[in-house]
Length: 530
Image 1 (tube, rainbow, N blue to C red):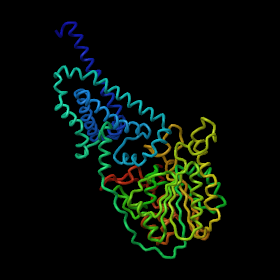
Image 2 (cartoon, one colour):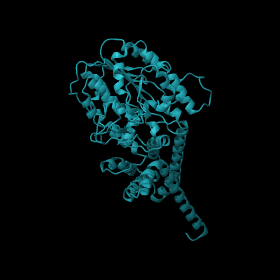
Image 3 (cartoon, helix red, strand yellow):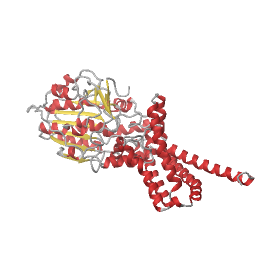
Image 4 (cartoon, rainbow, N blue to C red):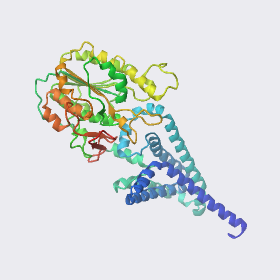
């Protein structure tokens, strides 16, 4: 009898078991979706956007309820499958969130796939947040198993095992998959972290192929004086580090230092894509597809330049979203990664090219100093336990030792234009993601920009430093190739003889994942994030 002492005890134990199982599941789901829940519900509510906060809460509640039902009902075999699927998707989200401090979406997942080759370096650099993310994931798995252990026997006892039969299990698993299929179709959001990676992956792999690049219709002057143009795009060199370490090497080299310059991205991929594509800073918006622009390669070829790309960071396929329609426009592509002296080897190779006949445009991505910084200088250079700042400066010092001397040795500068910059800056603070962070700071955009131009052209560009942007490199180069300067300035941005017309910068979603999709772009009159 329920009123007997033994019946009352059994009742309390049953209630306790149900409550404990529910709390264990709720804790697991809250941990899986910690960042999405915070951003889509709490932040929206704090901004008085109660309607969308309520819709997000309803979306999460439905998905959590579905996963809860599956957890306590399906057979042991299908529960293992469910946990495996949840672990994979939640693991990607939780580790990403722990390192970057941001949530995943479709665009960021696309970016993540392009940066997969950096996974080993990232794992070593961010070992602590990676371990914490994995630890949370293991705790989540433990909670789900605990919830299952507590609640499934009660369900089986109540329904006599009928819900574990094959037909019922298949129906429940289909029920589990429903949000992943219906939410994108119905334009509902957000998807839970336990399932979103599959929807994002499906959208990425079913996306339309990259569009063909637009052709160049404008005609350049046939008598361009400049026969060699080189873009040197370093890796992770901040303006502050350049000013202290590299700038003194350029004192006697007739270099024009444009001062602190704004990168068009705080991650490598958006920065490089924007540099290669050219950005119309006065008209750029979220509907722009940089994959469709004429690109620097098209302009260079139209002006009679052989196009060359040298990548000192890879030994395999191209990186930074260099897709096939764009790759086809490059006459010579070189994967040039070759150890910690790669940059010096590239400088010596370019020095030889600068002394040859013919017109060439070269886009050279240097090895630079991507984390981990200690991988970019010989062992024993610094004492064990040296600060991150010391490691960073040692890496830059070693990376650029003798670089410009080797590059310019014996070169006739009268017909040569060389530009040196970095893809993005660095925020060197212990325990903080140095670039490509979820909440970027100005230091992640602050890069150097230096020009080595013929002596008779330098006076035109020495109009004071500051106010410059990566977006100006494209139109300046077009003018040097023989294109009308007014066209280049009006179509893209001011030439480097003046400050930028408008600052523009891109997030990880620099190109649309699907046709008609939006990109992650911002613009302002001020330096990014200031």
